[in-house]
Length: 292
Image (cartoon, rainbow, N blue to C red):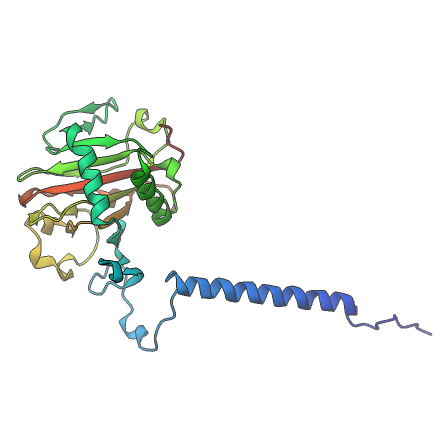
């Protein structure tokens, strides 16, 4: 005679109740996370007709954007992130900086501007070069509250800690001044001792430029002539994928691929300014903490 257990072959009541509670709690947490992603624009539900307009890799004919914040009641324009390219990986955060933040960086930099230099790949040291004819200066990381706030926003945008960033570099280009195509990553060991390799760059435009001054990526892949502002580009700007300077916008591009290899398509340059002045600020981000 076989004696059946108290609960037979079924799951014990207490254990079943415990699993039900865990499942319910997980469902609530997942729902909250899903709603949060929807609210912050990180995740979206495609409309029924969106499948017709699915863009292929390197197709620049249609670029979607998400509005992150609105400040129209205070006279500030909308902010949104626009995906520009997959090779290199590049995006623009429109109106990343306010006009006041742009002017603050320019005013801090003006008294200390010197001839810009480049890195000698053989020695790792700075040197003067005709390929870079701008003037610039560095602002210490965390130099004041406005700089700290900008650096915090950069960290939020890139998901790279503030401590991995070099100090802000402010650059000024007058008519005819330029920066020939180059990579931001290093080919020497000297410059990677502190913080390792440069993984990404955030280039912030502090002023509008009447003509010229584009940031051009000559090795990028894509149908560049399909860009909506193609006809507004200078001849230099039409030499690859280009971004027009606009006060407050921040261009993020990655010098390394997701597998940690260097990305040669991140080769970029600053086209000559034809009319007006160009002010910009660069934040280079390292793989590891950059000690200052």
